[in-house]
Each structure stands twice: as C-alpha cells, then as structure tokens.
Length: 301
Figure 1: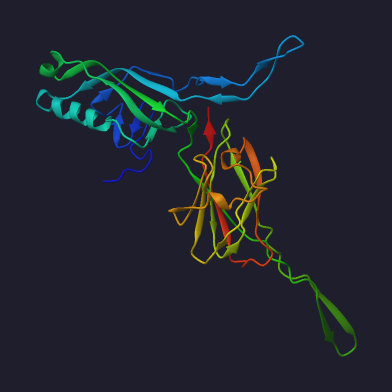
Figure 2: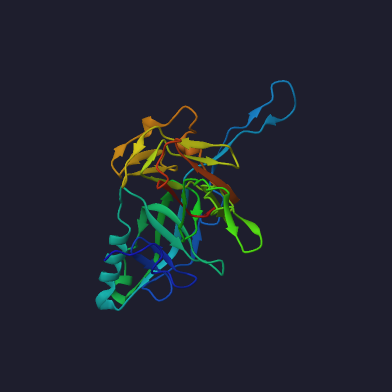
C-alpha cells in the first residue's frame, strides 16, 4: 500500500516517517525530539577585513539537519511485542533515497522534511517479557535542512496572447450613424504570482510543456532567468528541478546543456519569502498553446 506524505498524521505528537507512525495511539510513545526546531549548523562565508575592524559578511549555507527521537517506548501485549519491534526496525532501515519525515508538534500544524534513518537503538532486556521496552531512540539526517509545508502548490501559466484590438462597426439607424468600439478580449500576460508563506527561500520544480520554442521563466523579484534553447513538441515536458539542479526531457534525457547564456544556474533560482512574480516567455514564433507549471512548497528554517 502506498502512503501519501503525512496521511497518517492526525494530531499533535504524531511523527510519520515513510509509512511508520509514531506517537499517541500507536505502540510507540516518545519524550523528546531534538534538532527539529533548532537552527541547523551553518557554513559561513564571512571573512575578516584586511584594513579595518570587523569582517565582511558572507553567505550563510545550512548543513544537514540531524533529528533525534529520544525516550522512545515500545509497548504492546507480550505476545506481540516482537511484531511491534519488528515494525519499528523495518520502518527505520538504511535507504538510498530520503523519505518524508512529517512532525506535528503543536497548533501550527505538521511540517515535512526529507530524511534517512541513520541510527536506531532498541535495548534488549526484560521489557520483551512484560511488553514494555524503554529507552529506545531513532536518529535521522536530512541533507536539506529546511522544513516544508505539506501542501504542494502547482501554479500554471500560458504564453501571452495578443489582443485583437479595436473593431470599428457601422450601425446605420433610421436617423443617425453610430460607431461601436469593441476593444477585444483581454490578452494573457503569461504571468504568475506565487506566495511562499514560510521563512526560508524555497526551490521550485518547473515544468515547461510543449508545443513551445526556447521556453523561459523570469523571476521579476531577483532578475534570475531560466531559459532553454530547444523545441518542445506537443506532449513534451521539460522538467527543471532547481533543488537538484537537473533539467530532464520527459523524465529521462538530460537537457541541462540547452541552457542559454542568459540562464541562471538552476540551484540559484529560488522563491523568496512572501510573493514572487514570474513571467513565462518563449521564442516569437512559438505556438501559444505552450504552458508552464510551477510546483513548490512553503519552506521554513
């Protein structure tokens, strides 16, 4: 059975890692969670001033976030304590790809990180005979230290469509001649407004969908541009994962080399806190049926 991100989390105190649920109403109770609300370790680019007091402030880049669940108790009937421990063990095995870790602490609701279990401790003692094992612990490592909202937003836009302009019509009446002015339908500007309610910049996933020639997306807030010099046929999807720094055509072939000279490095293209305006454009002779889809989650430190 496939479990969606955070589907098992129902109330404060719940922690879901992949398909494993910990907390109230489960065989697993915990006392403390470390590293979740803490600011992660930061690499600082600050350097001392050569001829004056102080330093030049440099960029701050977050290291991995380490999350520890301590004081974990496994409790079940004596004849099924082994099954409860087995489920905990199976749910925290080493994996290659990070899994969603969802934590709901208080009235603010749950937040999400992608992490891997890197340590697990289950004491072996008399607890197996009474159905209560105390002092267990689990530790995760999240290579992306940011935490995210559970809702992923998907905002589409189409290419600009020119307005038809004025339409002058003669309406002869029995006694007068009148002129009716029709300004035509409102054109599409190819613009998107996205809102990041978090307190950290977030990396979007951008999908250019054909038919379109040399698609581009511009961040009006920062001036950053993503532009790719290739034609997309109807049904083609060019996916730009700005967190991973990848550009793939139809989910397989890399097209990173098609980035134009004015294109920003993918990992630099972020959505800052608050509202960001984006503009979708393409080559002048592109089919107006081309579209873009911007997917993102609000990000939090």
